[in-house]
Image 1 (spheres, rainbow, N blue to C red):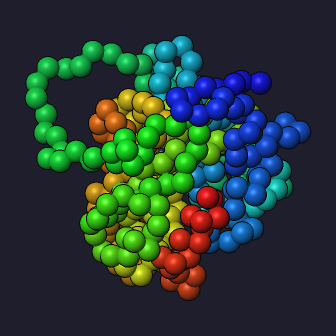
Image 2 (cartoon, rainbow, N blue to C red; image 1 turned 45 degrees about the vertical axis):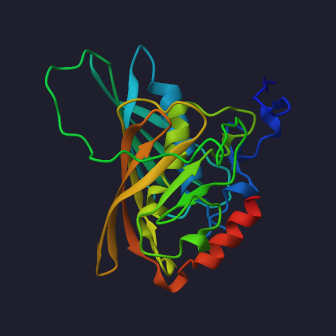
Length: 287
């Protein structure tokens, strides 16, 4: 059992930290922390993204290959059932490796993901265009580093805060998160951490002054490097929607700077709109 000592806190074991899944009988069983805000019987998107990223990384991030792109398709509601994740290597070249994984429950596929892994090499010469303004993390006074999961912080036109109702507007949204673990008793790898937090692209790009009325059907994460530290930020870059369909993009960042981007496509779920007050309740429950 691993014991972690982080500044200003008592040492703890990873078994004490909440996780989305327990490892059971050659597969995984969702815990109560995996419940979605859309339905208590449905596994939340970050949990699935983290679990698929974990399996792809463990099986295929070998021999110097590093994951640079993760695409997750969540086309069916994953339930609170025993879950297995068979994975297959699709291509294995000298510089490019591609692999797939599926979320299987009761013999049916509930979600799937693919990853592209590359061999790092030297940078080509020349200057390239960069984003005019880098996302800014919350101050250390507001969000001191911690190895333990924290309640997410949100930002919009005002200051960072944990209450979504304080961001009940149509401004650009951002979040700063240190997520719970994917599997009980395991620390998160940087790649899995990025997959979990990157799924917040859906919330950040689909969140307006009346709450959230779109549910994402996928998430594509692209990384130029692995995140550093425990916390990761997601800042919305764009939202386009029409006829109940939406596309959103976001930048991922840590205290060193931006390190990747994410994109989601979403479908209207207006009949089960999540209000800002409901988001407050969900955050309070995590506290």
